[in-house]
Image (cartoon, rainbow over all chains, first blue to last red; front, side):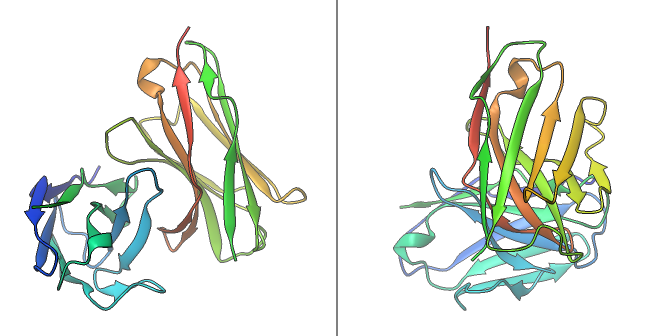
Length: 107
Length: 118
């Protein structure tokens, strides 16, 4: 099973700041990585797939990069609605697995 | 607009079988493009993929749950289902159904909480 390790566990930032979230895979997943956003009481929402492709309706301030084992989700300028938990997910090998999540909280 | 809605008992006794259904509306469950799946999230914890099913009945299960999981699809009623046998307290979780596109979860239901307790 491919293990995805997300860091940091919690990121404390202010609106308008840049957020940089990391996801590291235990083995290479090439570009087979996605990012999801989950707000309290809501289901996750697909943000990025294929490491760098924004899903439908996702604002341009969200961007993904990386390949192999190291990936980054960047939020260029945090909006109030962006404070949430973010998960990465790989599809390179069965079983499909998720990272443990990074909580982006208001500083 | 695609919508998924989970339904099922919110309380299941230990050693019994958890059964959930996901109703699909706004899109055809028969589409060959998609799989349909279940993901669970224990309270305050992360996400775990349970399994995926295609309208032709093809299934993929998480090996950690494979011995206890069965998924099925009813295209005439546009829903798919999950059965998880021999549940324990560690199976208590929020269960989500989702549409799967190329093994990405692109649309999710709102989730249903299932508590395992006597």
